[in-house]
Image (tube, rainbow, N blue to C red; front, side, top):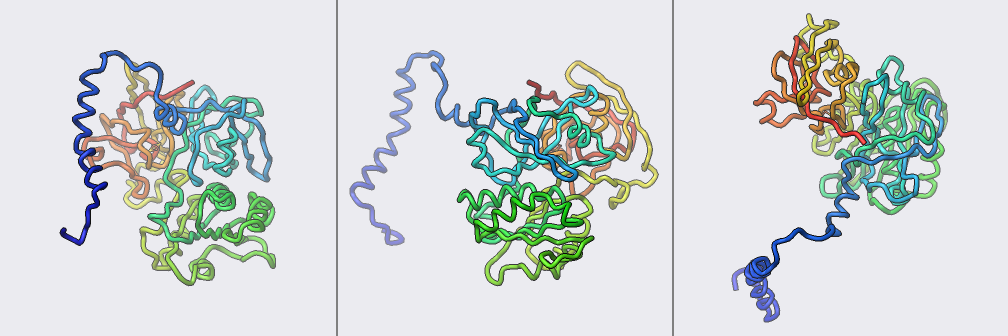
Length: 402
Ligand code: FES
């Protein structure tokens, strides 16, 4: 036999049976009655439970933090919610000032919680923003919230990632890492996680006690607090620099760097990470939004800053006209106009908001252009990551509601 492979008798029979399988299948199909299948296959039920179109959840509990709140969302009867990989997010749908809007929030609880019928998400105040403060000021225990299935690819993958992960977090960017830490502690994930968490001062650290408790229970999780405006013996001082990260890199083996935090953190820490010379494939970023200062992006047409443009939007048979600030993504203008448009990640990655640009031009910052080549060639845009630089005409798909 070539390559020294020896076929045993039983193996040969298996191969023969396998070769006959298509014929057997065709005979069963040919002899079967032509009628609809009764009921639903278990595999379809399982797929639906794991990947529902949406989940109608209830706010079961609210936990206060200094400038944020954690919402425990779940099924009222405690039945399981869709399972997730630690690091994924939920896109939550709210009605604010007569607008249906969606916002993505990383799940901060252990995947185990989903079997108990609940998730935790944390929303941090964002003065001047369109949604966060209004959600925090109005969402009450008992309110209903429509959530997507768990989404996103910001999770640990043993095939792709190193055995150790250095997680760089800023502000509420700690939430996906808290979920990963719980998952390691609960035996769901198996990797070494060192979280380097930047905060202004001790009192603005989110989940300090929870992180402490996990590190006490689980040697695979370490947490290093870095304070920029306070000096403490048990914390690093200053910012998350290349020098500081180097202190915590594993001495042997490959490690992955995961980053999650506000735009200012990526602008600074991203450059520091580059200095470490780590292969790009081991560097992962979870963007929580697109840029808040589009005019500072390379290639932005400077004379468009602060302009207001007209938008003509077509959805099915309906046509809407409204204005849009050049400084905000088209999706925000759509929501401000009270029009429901689909979205999930809100940072150009998932394609859920994919729409056809019929007329006009938009500016798409380089780091958030997640379109496929064919979409670029045929005039599709992701409105969540596209800023108008002229009057535009756009066709958007529908949106789910309960
Ligand atoms: S919402 Fe994900 S690409 Fe726009």
